[in-house]
Image 1 (cartoon, rainbow, N blue to C red):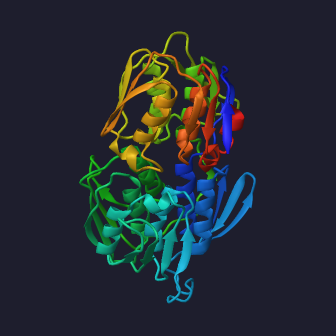
Image 2 (image 1 turned 120 degrees about the horizontal axis):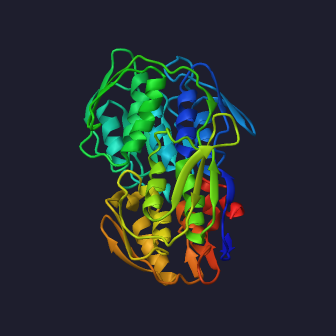
Length: 429
């Protein structure tokens, strides 16, 4: 699909969609219980749909209404849930890397073999370090793709042990943390973490263990974890929090175009790391305030800009998903903007550093590509033109925001990819 965005001011009141990170974690936890959970206002996107499909294939029963998903869990260690172990079940995660990485460990809790596969992008996203850790924990792992990529066969049971898990993506560690407490009683899983990017997502995962009263031992650096098996998850209910990752796009659209924006559905106390976007936008010259929302207890984030955007240097190690939208915002800022310490942005759906550099050049924006980030030489005029999303949802939404203040319309190829996490974003603009 081609989307053509014409320049205009974007503002008004926007309710932020539910968090993908929360939605997928809740789906998996609910599926791993032996009770009934009700998830209110989940994110209904392609990635979330992929997770629903995987959970159903692993044994969960999921009923859907527009604002609520009801999940009957399958409790993987319960005898009788498993089919013929000689016939692996195929699990297609589509384009959802979050579903792939988090579900790999969940699938290892039982004894049925599963083969994980996905689209062409997924078949280029390596799970290598996670698979090495799972294998060291006694789990059968067969990699049918190259370099730790899907298709991947997984078969439990989980035997435990001590493993080293470098995490260029935090999802490797979140995967083990969510599954390890459900390993058989007497099992001990210990994890050394010599490298950890995206730390806030680990805090998010641990918040679910805390809510479930699952004990674990760690340190301030999250460089070591000790988790005993033999625990179980209780059903969980309630609304899914709004997504700071998605909120970044309307926020930057307003910052770029000079509109006044009110965002509803966000919780300033939520551990999501991408709430850093508002601190960065404030440093770039936006006014950010929290006020009372429309509903009792609801917060409203208000964003406006009275002066020019300013460049700066921003460390994105904890929040690499912000790189595309901050890169286009920086194109309209005075001076240079350096987005640094984000080499892991290269191993997302695309090499987002290289893609953003190449596509911004098409709109007349000069960039300097670095191994761990990007320097955007702002202050010039952003031309209209044609850019390619490379099938990456965050690239689509970033350039849609950039188009609002370009000199001429911007045409985005592959714009349907936005449905992966924010199905209504292009309509919103």
